[in-house]
Length: 425
Image 1 (tube, helix red, strand yellow):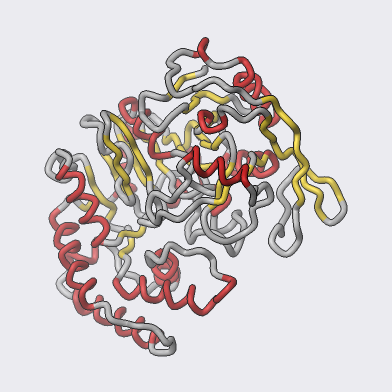
Image 2 (tube, rainbow, N blue to C red):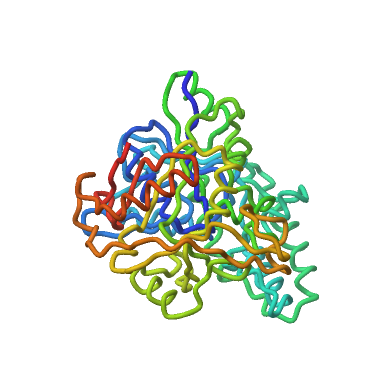
């Protein structure tokens, strides 16, 4: 029997998961997205074109791979239809080719979920979470509150009645906020998206995944966001609304824990964060601006500028521990080319003590980073294709990280294109 490998982010998201899934997809029979919603944006580049996926798994461009949207994902039919239409425009139709299926148990984002999201953020004022306002949080709230609608419900004869009932509940809540609650135009697009969902193959995903494993077929679970945004283990309350860790792959796909195989963790050679919340190594200066400029650090979905800083080893060790990471991928090493010195946070000074782990609270209590200075490299990495072309100082940085983290770096990304990926071991 085969196992489910998991690929996920080890920082605050935006680590380059989509690109690596695309690179690895030819070696898997199924790519399965297991959590999150269209607040995630996975950017892929190849053959001179750039693609941004919000809900659809990043194996969609490999003609021999089945792509599954799992039960742990929340779906906005409007955004989903837009994704499909964009793929069709570029010559890809995963529904017509039967290369994209969706779990009947995945929950639906309603038009009023978006309004509830906006109302909640507005009420918080300066304490905003930094939501993308896509309705993700309120959808998961309804899921946990046992009042949500699922993809499989679209096939029931009383679906519209169920929809109207939940909309009425949302409108009652929204009546207490001073916001514009006009959603009818979006609703019309929403039902167009529902018709698309009804036309595609809806599956009992947990059975499908386990059938693949019984047939010794390889499955890769694709995560969204990053470990430090996990609802339980992230920098709460500045987190997403789902479990972004490897445990989330079990509940988001219906795979038992003993069915998990390799856990592939992705991290940037530095660190970024979008939205509010603590960020110990943030560089609110010209160096941070330079990292943002060189790395094109703007959200794939929202366009928001990302906060930039040096790599945070206590946070990375924490993420590796939580996920049981077995191999690492380092991305955006090319962005650091030209920096004479780079820095790695090795410890925090926290409540007067020096610690090397991520504590419970780094929001109300400041975790001041302690840095190790590391020699930078000047070589342009974007044109290298062989391991022996990697600059000596970059290789020294990689070896240092492997020693500190206790996990091998297997892949190195030196640019956004799928070809700009080196296998190190």
